[in-house]
Image (cartoon, rainbow, N blue to C red):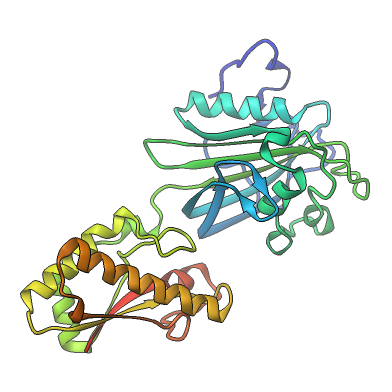
Length: 327
């Protein structure tokens, strides 16, 4: 539970929601497990995704995006709180910081006011037009429409679980909706540990050989990239090692290494991304594992060969893959 943070901030301890608040939580909403809210706050926006990708700033945000960022994937909960206007964004952030510190989180990045970048750029990054929530209709959709330049931002990670918490707070002056005018709006993102790729077992060289002998191809989900990038992550190493073992155990085997994407984004972009990712896999296998270059041919087909429904998170996750195809 939260302890008293300091005499200065005990005015509004993180607490359970009050029954007397002017607006009540939207249907189906709840605080993230283990992360209480600011006293008097109400949830005006809520969404949960079974698996999502998010870029969190590690430096000032411009209208082209963060100057530096950390890309994270995993189950994601988004909450917008409306906090009574006698609190300030700084006070809100200080309370969340103290709570997270108490729980053992480690700070990744924090900023205040113009050090974060223009508040409109922050809103564009965290609450873009194509990613707005609809729980209270226009009230939720128009959140952060006219924030003051007193924004505060903080995000931190639990080193034991990998759980990430991001908090963006700003004072709202938009006067169309009395429910939010004159309040501090707080956007909380919680990205949980154990994303899908961490739960996947590494396919062994023998299993790859068996699938290639039966079907002529095998989909691999243990080859992982940074979000929207062809940069391989260290978690890919076990699968890359098994592919190398496959080639060593089958000297005559030659392979197409085929990159696949979901349908998020433009067609030409996805074709290019899948090609770059396939090329990155081949480069890693030849340079780090000693596989002969003439045994591997990279190819990218983007979203052209889905194995699941691209309208669901689960389906998109299945469609993002690398395949080995026997030549």
